[in-house]
Length: 465
Image 1 (cartoon, rainbow, N blue to C red):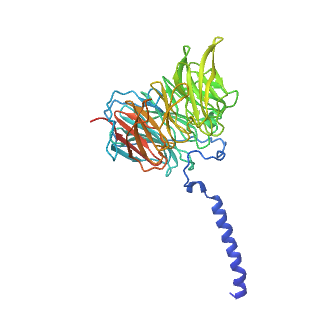
Image 2: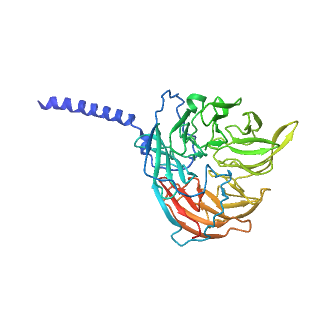
Image 3: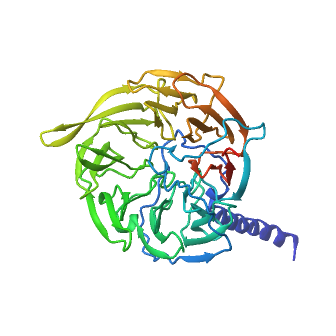
């Protein structure tokens, strides 16, 4: 070939190579390589496609050699048996520990996320994500040693979006129910892992996947599973045995699903589910799904993560990030019905909670406010004490057991302090996880504390020997 021919061919070849490379680059899933891990970015939420997925998600059940522990403790859902993040077990716990922290009983790798554990009958349940299989994975482990008993997974494509799975299963005597990142509700036999039923809330009820995926934790209440949909219906209840709809709550204002979870309470002889939806707060009848009351004075534009906290007869404490601060509601009987009115509102520098739900314990509210200080409030909204700027925490979880508060910072340092209004008193602290993002809700059962960071879950022995 002559030099002139080469001169003509080379630029054409380079152009073709460049076009092909550009096409491949644009077609790639760039989100897979993201490394930034912030909880809720300050910019506008990432939009998800509302395209309906008509596929039937065929699941698969795998059995392993794990054996349930012969231990009586239970933490059957988000915030435990009484929905308050307080352990009521009569188990003596250590009040301090050595520099290295409590003994690690077991440790497992988990998919990227913040999904915490539920515990019942010696079994640990987690909703995980398997990136290799591109599937949500419902896993059942032994509380004794963390060995897997069974795993049920179904295919759903999830991109890294500040973590993947982030909800806690709810488990009862016969069933375990999960809500996946893209709003798939799955019910399995909690002992065998056998499939019961599944709902796709986007396809079946017109829900929209929230920014940063679903963060609401489902609820089993008696023989029904309850989910706040925020689509064609505000809330639905399904028969745990069949998956058939028992009732649906109208959604006249078109409130969307948030990251907040429903909390049950009773007032004026009515059992209800309190929910922070996309446009306000609502109380829904547990009997028939009717709206008992609603209020629009409380709503968070970007991400409503903390759940309502019942703090007394008809008193409900709300908190949030993005300068929302906090609010106390009072329910009252009015004209044969129920109404809700604000009692007070606190600015975020007094108290607000960006991610975790505060704890009501022995007449006081404990939580981490936006300046990262652990704070104790009274029911009038007055600050009783803070951990001070010398003792700051991030977006990590906290729980209370035996009068002690366990609180985790972002990087995996666990602090043990006294849950008392007399002041911030530290008993012990230790680095127990490597981090980052040790944000998964805690679980306490049989003198064991289950924690996680972005990629690992551990079980600590916190019982007295």
